[in-house]
Image 1 (cartoon, rainbow, N blue to C red):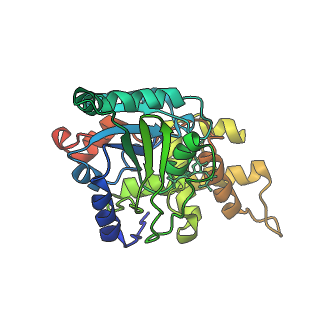
Image 2 (cartoon, rainbow, N blue to C red):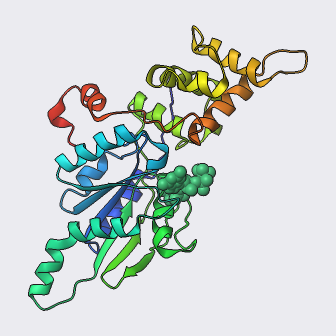
Length: 294
Ligand code: G4P
């Protein structure tokens, strides 16, 4: 399935980001734990090359725990402080603070040696929908961090002091993911990072059934009480229509409705906690393990 869509405004967002970097000690990069690679903008490696950086695998509650562990190991090996998090149900604030403290330690000590108390300013970045606002709100405790995701709309420069030594800054521009890798684009679409109104919902659900059927073969039969997966994704979707009674007037199967239901239930983890990519798969996909660092 071809997802042929790429919003503009990248250059502006990049410029804004670069300007703001000067006032920042540390980058907190947020990715979606279900698709850690596809939910990163590859420009980030370049942009943040000289900055201390920590990785947050957010929405970890929706992701496969065993694969999240592989990703955590992967980022650790790349030398980053990293953490799996469920920002929507915050209970791990102290862990986040600890991780930031470790990443900023060198800077804080350097300043302390000069007799100055350092307030660490961390910029929260990530592509739309990974949970940046939710992450900041976890500390701010209000809707203050909520901002628009429309391309080209600049967020106000939010700076929130969360401890006596730590400030969080909202990302200054919206950096969209790159969609030139078809697998990555598909994963973004499946998790809902790309809005369905520009896509063929049935085509997407068919891809979902194929991927979930392969990775988690018991998930669909269990959820929809099917004896087994259909011979093709179309057959599985038809079987779901019958089980759920998704029928049009005249008794025809309402496959569109089954498609919408599948996507929604996948995104809410009603099919189970799932991850769509592993570090090894990404290494293989990029063809060269050396060039794939993060
Ligand atoms: P953004 O600023 O990076 O664009 O993302 P935002 O915080 O707005 O979060 C996007 C959606 O993801 C929100 O759902 C939010 O509740 C959800 N979310 C964020 N962090 C987590 C997490 O750790 N776990 C889970 N399960 N959900 C999380 P929403 O407001 O319902 O938006 P949508 O579902 O309509 O996109």
